[in-house]
Length: 426
Ligand code: MTE
Image 1 (cartoon, protein in one colour):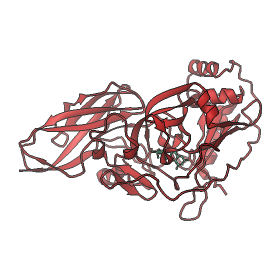
Image 2 (cartoon, protein in one colour; image 1 turned 30 degrees about the horizontal axis):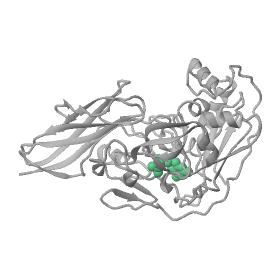
Image 3 (cartoon, helix red, strand yellow; image 1 turned 135 degrees about the vertical axis):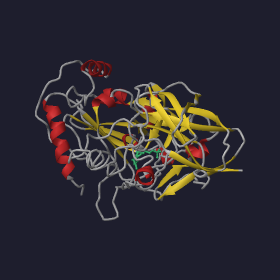
Image 4 (tube, helix red, strand yellow; image 1 turned 90 degrees about the vertical axis):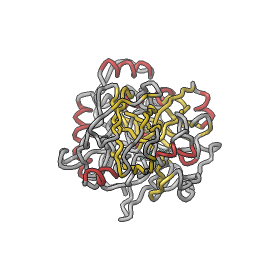
């Protein structure tokens, strides 16, 4: 049984009001942009109104699951948190722009399922289609025009642990430091093309992709069902792809084999792995992952929580172990990465004196929204003892990492400057 939380009622009201105003499929995207997206998906501009139809509830195909994460997780590259594996940021040094699969973090609600690409089918269904359910095999998806996107996948809770260690405001959830992110080159087919092929109705407003991994059951026995999260049509038709390749090779088991969704710039939960079906609906859709989870709750937010999270926030990190030791009177090359879901990185500043003075780091990659930029700066420490290194990124929308992040109970979207502890030795 799927739980219907209190927050869902409030969200339902908000989305229903948008729907009644004919704005549900756009979810904040401007009219002109929405018309362009609809035209590209083969839809005209008329937006007829009708009463919501009851949405069907489809059970996904049954699959057998493997246990845990399939790929090796050597301790020099990963920190294991239960069913998840965080990349050690220092292990990214020298890996190049794209994160190799051998270093890419894994966020699993349950365990990686082993799916057979030869028999795998994607079911597209719901009252938002004109001609009823449509199935696609992998060969058919590959016969459609392919696109590649270089984009990060980053967990909304990345850096959550710093709410506790830097702000003394602990939050529930996996205690990630900064390694719940990786950037890859994804190849696949545009979701817009698949929806068009399936027969997208002019009345469609939401799509809900769902994974084939096991149902998510919490330790207290609550069963949330299969991992799924709706997104408005404006995002679905924009830059979302159904990816079947990662860094030039077939998608590996832990990252969604044979096909995952890739929603560039958005919180990682939007990029559903092991895709099994996509519901297309004429009414707003809900799942615990856009009502209970992945919204901001807490003193600074309304009782029903914020709107569901969409874009990722801004961060930067040093490719250095925590408490690294660095020799005094030696010129070190400090390296790191910075990224934002709102715009490309335009500036990174570094402080080696705990935030009193800042200097600009050298940027090694062009600004690219939804992917990261590598940076470096030299440092010759003089005084032995503990020190704090800080990096502060600014993106093309002029956002700069703040000193602290307004807390939320689930510890999402930490964007504050991280104070990285090191020790200088004589
Ligand atoms: N999709 C399914 N089916 N099951 C999951 O557990 N985890 C989500 C998302 N897609 C998840 C999923 C979350 S929270 C994140 S951050 C990303 O996948 C992580 O992708 P990765 O494991 O390839 O790094």
